[in-house]
Image (cartoon, rainbow, N blue to C red; front, side, top):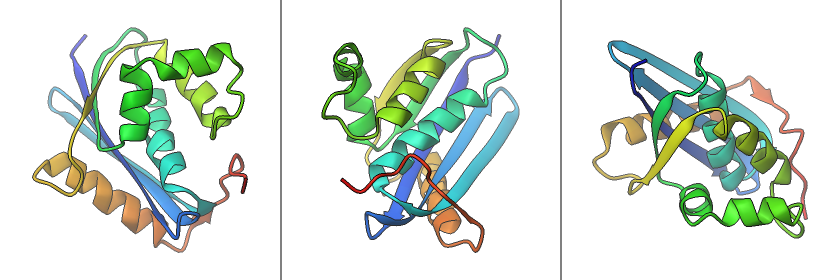
Amino acid sequence: MPDITIYTDGAAQGNPGRGGYGVVLLSGPHRKELSAGFRLTTNNRMELMGVCVALEALKFEGSNVTLYSDSKYVVDAVNQRWVFGWEKKGFAGKKNPDLWMRFLRVYRRHKVRFVWVKGHASTVENNRCDELAVAAANSGALNEDTGYTAD
């Protein structure tokens, strides 16, 4: 099974406001781009939703994945292992528990390594994800982020 490289990014205009995520999946000669926009959401939700959607798009369980994100929120939560402590405490007092639970379900089906990249820098695929996320947020076809709550 070939290794898979994923880039993700999220965007929100207003935070909360209109938002979107962008994903680029790379495996051998294959490339796939995914994006969607939402009427009312936050930047962190879009960052995390992009990761969830990307991992859910993988066809084979046990895939070796390197996932690049400019979201310290997501990358540090996983690499510092905070999310696993949050899970043990039922995500008490944490934002976005719906997406963190969704993330953990799909994360555990693969071998995922997270790498933080500087946003709006020279990482071509991260910049492409940003373009996808912003375009999705500005599109006329905006979904409802059913898990978003103003708290």
